[in-house]
Image 1 (cartoon, rainbow, N blue to C red):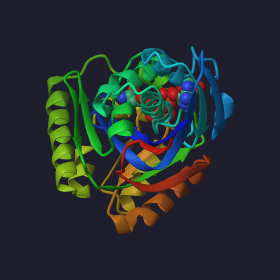
Image 2 (image 1 turned 135 degrees about the vertical axis):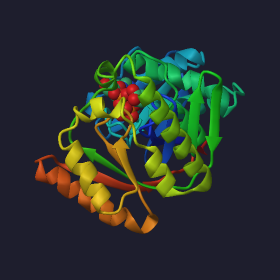
Image 3 (image 1 turned 180 degrees about the vertical axis):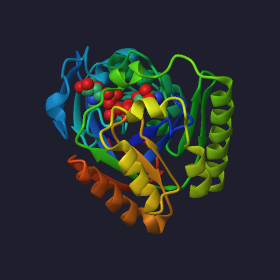
Length: 293
Ligand SMILES: Nc1ncnc2c1ncn2[C@@H]1O[C@H](COP(=O)(O)OP(=O)(O)OP(=O)(O)O)[C@@H](O)[C@H]1O
Ligand SMILES: N[C@@H](CCO)C(=O)O
């Protein structure tokens, strides 16, 4: 048996739609795999009642097929599904690394990124890699059709997860099909600022670089209380706030000592609009770990 822990991730970071991602140091999924003649799946943990065990509908089934590695796969969910925290990607990345080890396929983590992305295609219709790349490689990742670039960033974060469900498939439908040249210039400037901030480990630059006029405003409409929570986090000292992945989680970047205050302000603002929520005080973390053979 091989066991792998793969972390939650936050994709987009505002200005980097379908490109940027970060690994979070918590929460995480744990996946156990054992060789079998055909793939079977068992799911326990957070939100497991909403996750199919049919290999054609669970992301890990697609990963096992892509690696030609049938197995009994047991997933212990720590990342709630449809959270905007890369729940499906955590399972996909963990399964890819575990099955690669179990069957001794010898693929590098970089080579496993497109394989894990096959799992994402099962849930959202597209094999985007912006969650699976950081889940496998850790740090801040830039995923393009040329491959993935990684920066070992260390930035404090708060991820606030409300009890609202937003599926990635639905959230992709509201993304505008076109943007103006002014918005393009704005986005390039912010994305470049964010990347420099990650390299310098500077939360203020990262926060300034999160601002996005194109995708985030459309996605924010799907999250009850988004404007109130964002304003509360900024007032409590956050350097930047945006939708995490496809939502409904909201991600704030701040100084290490501000995380408790920012988390409390975000929870209170959700509470004011009658939405229950939980907050993870986290930071940019490592990629998936194999911790048992
Ligand atoms: N192993 C799995 N883990 C989580 N969700 C899964 C898994 N397999 C299939 N799914 C399905 O995928 C959907 C959740 O994926 P979705 O991409 O919407 O959420 P997410 O991964 O939390 O979001 P995001 O990619 O925005 O961070 C749910 O419908 C769930 O049933
Ligand atoms: N980039 C993806 C991440 C969610 O899987 C999106 O925002 O739709």
